[in-house]
Length: 289
Image (cartoon, rainbow, N blue to C red; front, side, top):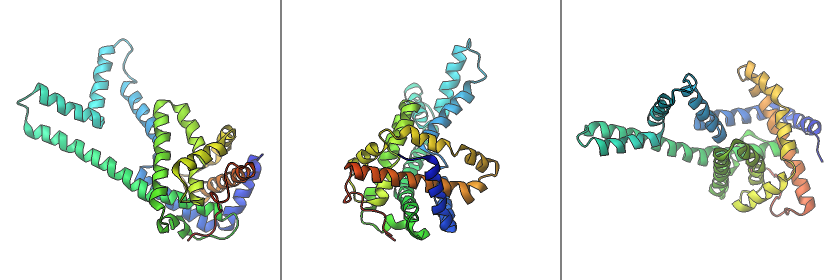
């Protein structure tokens, strides 16, 4: 139904026509993602946790079971919110005469960590999620006409921006939960949900459950081919890495975004042809700025 070469060619043609704006849009989203999200996504966070656990135990011999258990317990206690809270409860139960200042300090630190996490999630939901949707609207729009960088803010001017933000939140949450279960199901679900941000960019008023349903139907039988499409950029990503991200900013990121927009355009037309979705639900990408 579609070929990688054709999608990439169309994507390059689109972003090169409005090259400067495309670069700026990707740069803004990348910077906000780094600042608000720490440069990590949910699945990346899981990988980092697994890597940290490996680093803690990599020098311990298999025979030293007790030592391994002790080190892991210490690691959990010192580096996780649950561990810190458990430590507080243990001190309350085992050491009635423990310093009230020590306990208060531990509780305060745990409260601060929890508050920071909650604030970061809220900021991501209300700021980064709408901008990611706006980015997709921009890259879909440049397929047919010139667009402004300010298009990435169109969700904030829409009465449905909270609804859109919440749908994106659940998309990220479900992907993260599936990844916690097992890595492979998390990857599969991330591709099943891949079109949701584009659906929202086209219709901010769409029901959350319907957005998930449409994306699932669009990606039916397309997930592996889409994975291969993403994998085909690995050389470009390597180039971005060895140039300290400069190639990514100036070329790779807009190239990838424009190509993914071309994929959505193909899947959208197929979904309309098959009657999976109607034009009332996906009315197109008019300039919403």
